[in-house]
Length: 209
Image (cartoon, rainbow, N blue to C red; front, side, top):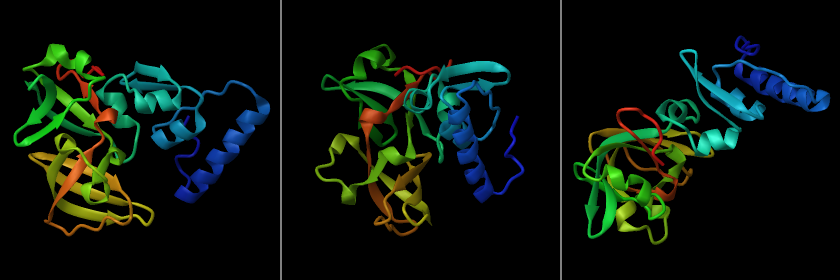
């Protein structure tokens, strides 16, 4: 039960590797309890995500990450965590859009049938930080997947940059390449990879698609 919680960051990384090697060598079932999503993702063959004693989802790490069962799982797995924006599903010229104030992005065709029942209703749009891009570095970015954001904080991490943005009334974090260096309080265009978008029911918080 959280055996690495009292170790420093460097030692935790080393011990994760050693425990994983031990598990592979022994080929036995191990139950490892942790609040650290990084440990769960890197060490587990299957993850059981729990909230207040209730199982939320059981799956392999990639499935948990790419297809979270609900908003809790989506927010727990991934760092920085998934961005969530609340708005409405609306139809324009036969296509579905997620709409919030002046911000509007088109829902890709594969997802549209799942969201048809939400037309004219509220939904929660989720997008991971790595699925947002600086438009300056995207060739032929579609207009219907682009929005203007205000830069509030820039965090250079060496191999990547975390941008803390404001899109409409929503705070959003983008994890972009090191070449992106916008100025604080500057407006910039960001591109949403809508093929990797997630949508959740606002009442149940269960995944729609």
